[in-house]
Image (cartoon, rainbow over all chains, first blue to last red; front, side):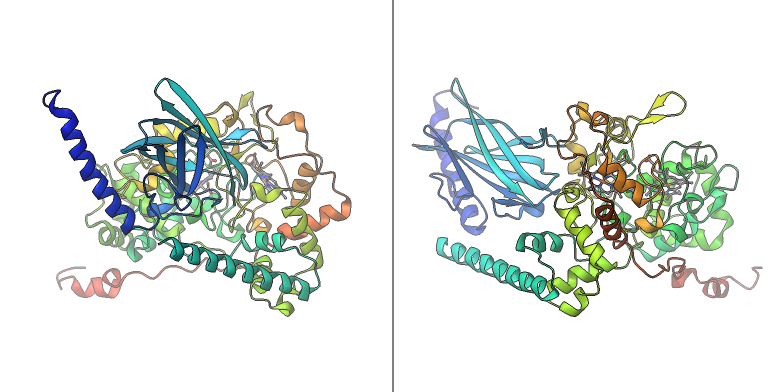
Length: 156
Length: 415
């Protein structure tokens, strides 16, 4: 924004503000992901190497739903947090999608990833239009590496 | 925080278990061996009717003046080019708002079967190809369609002005008179017709009474549900896998599928189904992404915003609701199947070659016996109410538009 030298300091101050806000939000709404390190309260955790991806579904009006039971044929949002051993990860969520392996088809809707800062992402436009087993597929860009993480969930 | 949440979860799990136990024992009391899982799945098809909520995209949803206006317009042949076609010509109230033809016929013969309109408020997509993402744009299309009503804004404005009652309700609902050059005129009329259609709700059917009886462990009421329908229900949920698509209280997931109904249209054409529907909804100025959506948050446009065209959409059609089918024969997007027996035979003898190679992997020829087919039909019939549904009830005019009130306001010099 201003000079290159000023940036790191500004960034960390901004980060701290963001962090305070983040914790306030996290404490205020019990459904929100609680940042890093992610614990089992933060929805479902998927680990690969040093990366932990925590996700939980949010229904209409951002109401959290149990991660292991996603209501069928309703739009929902995926709330995703990326963490590594140092805390908030520098990696980026670059792809999120889902398919039904048993039926060999995907979703009828194309999700869009909206970065929220601090390695937190909103994946909007999800819908599991049939009851049964769905496979969530995430792609995370971490430096030069692309990590693929999957997780099976039940829609009903 | 952790322990509170765990406790909450545990309490909820406990409740669910208790409910299952109640349902399971209700099943046992009734003398049918329904597994806990079956009871759970039966419960997911209700309760009925669904709670009504206003359509956020239609600012006159639930508005009494708009409902009166909409009712009047729905039955009004004067909106059509030849003065002979109303919405009700094809959507006949006595037949679940269907016309009993294979394909509709307005000013010209069409290519698709007329869908019934009960419970239309709960649809996500409208038309067999889902070419509309809201009820009012789906109600505007036939007014202008040269093959259906062939109307226009000018004709509609003339019609409204010729009817003091309709025009009064239009003004009350929209706060301005009907003007042919108002770009909102047709949308407003369609929103009025939509407001009326939203009131069309079918009453509970025998299946609903059975489902509710199981839920409250009422063995004697549950026992009234015919054994054939019970066996059919099990086929529907189990081997038939019907509920994969025909899910929830509407018996539809609101999405699209291919069950091998031919998509050829005479002469020599094809009906591309959902593939064309996605293109049409995206290019429609009256879609939920457009200026006429009254939901400023555009939250109701999520589906339209995230549409994802796929090859497999070619030849996919909307999964229809299975309620009120006794009223709405013939069946399928082209009306090609005459009876529920024939529908069941279609699924029983399914020709897999007709399904798309990249299509669903759910459907297999079921090879039902004659007795099983009868059971499945008995179940499908139990999704229609047994008593005739009274829908001809005309909505009440609003007080400001009552003829007496209006006359008393007119100065003595008036007629």
